[in-house]
Structure formats: structure tokens, C-alpha cells
Length: 115
Length: 111
Image (cartoon, rainbow over all chains, first blue to last red; front, side, top):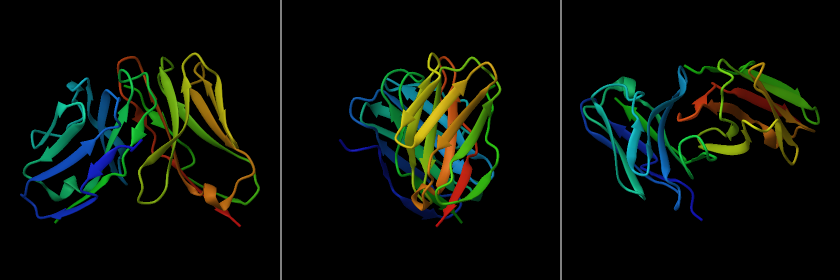
């Protein structure tokens, strides 16, 4: 079975541009998570969905960030407008069951650089 | 709010040594405790998951233990190898919440 698939793997953009990161969770998993990793702050939870419904978005930094999960096999994380401080690796992860019951599986991440 | 701490941030050992990585958490009412491995430039790979009713889990040369009363978990690696060099992260969650991660311990095993 394919793991969690993220695209793009690398994105370099200029400040002010819109960035869209994509994620396909493992088939059959009904919880999906977006995390951000930086050297300074480590891994931070941005938002998670259960059965396509956002459950906790308290980690989303500000209104420039938005996430959607239109169906069980696809999610997007959008940043508009992007800023240099958004540079980080963004990870998508999925698990079976509710948010706290299953083992978490991660994608390879999307490395974002905002110039 | 749950906080997860891993000390030390980095550890260097010679090949063959047995070692212990430490993880502490502030709220003992955890649901799961999960250990991950992260290689440079890669995603996280799940190593072991300990549910709140369990005390330990084993996989090959790895053994993870959980002591909720003291707010601690340890990851024991037996007979370390250069291929074990990576960053190890622990994470815990409580009822209805997602995993909260420590900042990891970067392990270097020299041959």
C-alpha cells in the first residue's frame, strides 16, 4: 500500500505569492494531520481532520493559512500571501480511527522556501 | 497544555553500545506515546506505539517503556549500529487531541 503522498517535495517562491501544498492520505485512514517543522520550534501541529471535518485548527498561525479536505483522499494547505517566516518543512500525516487512537504515518514532507 | 521534552538534544556513542533515549511529558493523562525516527531530509517513520494501558513495546533491538505516573518514556536501543544514526522523536497525546512532539534527540553511532 502506498504511504502518505505529498506534493510538491520542494517549493521556492517569492514573498507575497500563494502556495498550495497537497496531501493524499493512506487509503482507509480517516484522520489527517498537517504539521510544520522548523529548527527553532520543532514539529508543530497546524490542523487535523477526522472524517474530512476539521477538528482542531488552533495551531494555524494566522488567517493567511487555510486547509481543506474535500474528500477522504485529498487535502490541501494553502498560504496566501506567503512570507519568509513561513519557510519550513510541512508534513502531512494520517492515521486510522479518531485522532488519538491510531498509529501515525507521515509523508516525506514539502520543503517550502519563501524568498 | 501537554509539553514533551527530550534530553539530551544530541548523543554520540561507539558502535555496539546499548543506549537509552529519554522523553518526559507534563500531563500524565496520556492516551498514546509514540516513538519516531527521522533521517535527514526525510519524513518520520513510526518505531513503536505504546497505548496508555501498556507499559512497554518491543521491536527487534528497540524497546520502549512508559511510566505515566512519573511522566516518562524511554527508548532502549541494544547493540547500536551506524545505521541507527538519526533523530529520534517521541510524541504523546491525550483524549481527543493530536500528537504533541518533543524536539528530538539526534543520535550518532560511530564505527
